[in-house]
Amino acid sequence: MSKGLPMSRNATEPQAEREIIITRVFDAPARLLFKAYSTPEHIMRWFGPRGWPVTMCEMDFRVGGKFRFQMTGPEGQTNTPFGGQYLEIVPNRKIVYDNGFESPGAGRMIVTVTFDERGDQTTLVVHTLFDSIAMKNAHVGGGFEEGTGSGLDQLAELVAEMQTEESQ
Image 1 (tube, rainbow, N blue to C red):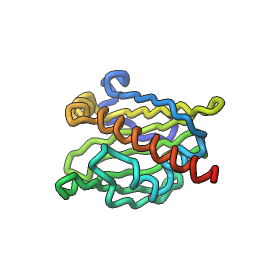
Image 2 (image 1 turned 60 degrees about the vertical axis):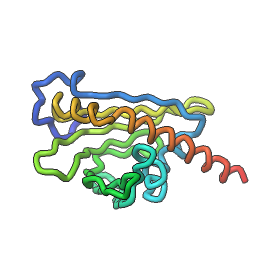
Image 3 (image 1 turned 135 degrees about the vertical axis):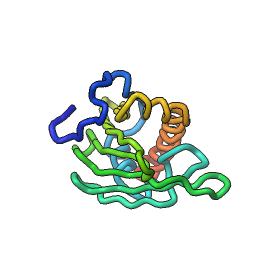
Image 4 (image 1 turned 45 degrees about the vertical axis):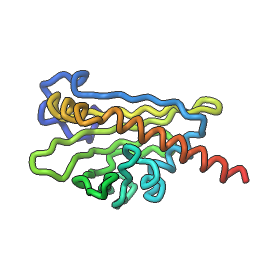
């Protein structure tokens, strides 16, 4: 873990058993993906599973700044808000933040997003380190990987639109 990142409450549990790594290659420059991650109006268009848009998006995108999101489901039901703090930002290369639901006893996770641009493509890696194996298992059971994948599908659509707008 990098200096300055909060320690897990269950640091004795092996990190490999508390993490999920999702990788996606985009036909887009890193700067557009970074912009989509760092701008509220873009977050509201792609973040989260399809059918569960971010309907509340508060962001202070700077190291030490906080964010708070809430999604609304297809039937109009609002989900528990979640959010955290930006821990590290390297423009067009890396974003690290902590995140968790605003529920009593909810655990925290550290999310590291990296953007590796090579030629006309950018490899995006989303590394999520959960407080505990139990927290990871609960998120996986709740569709975390599918939801993240669905969000990344929407991100690809948004970034394609951004590229088209740039070329006009």
